[in-house]
Image 1 (cartoon, rainbow, N blue to C red):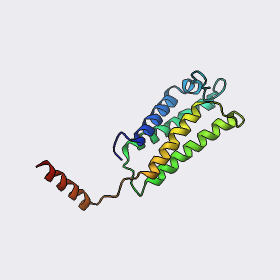
Image 2: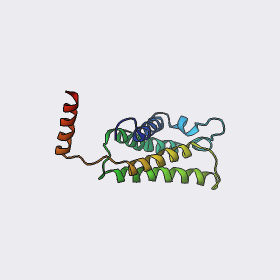
Image 3: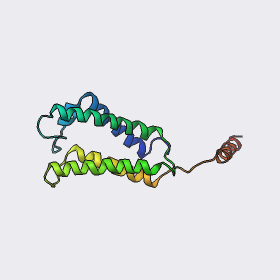
Image 4: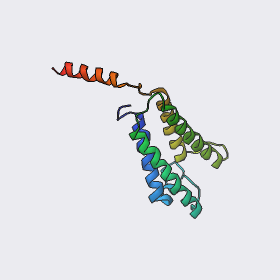
Length: 146
């Protein structure tokens, strides 16, 4: 996948959320804007902040991996499954916090971003190129440049 596609947007959002959760977990937990409620209600406990820092490290992993891996027909399913898991757990967290009523929270943004990412990773793998395929591409590009 070339840079600038949906995998990069998943990567950026995961990286930003992860770094925020590591270095400012209380701020991330309390983040709200207008009708959007915070990630957690009330003050976050030390245990919640510790869990957020650990989850932040996992999100940094997801973010850097989304940028650095060329998703092909072999490994795209693992990326899709991982994003789907993040999406489903985020939606479940939002629903269970609010007694299964929709209340706008950052959980829904995480769920949406990673659901789109799961679809993208699943539906758009790069072809598995052999060295012969790459040589043909290089020769075609060289011929075109002359």
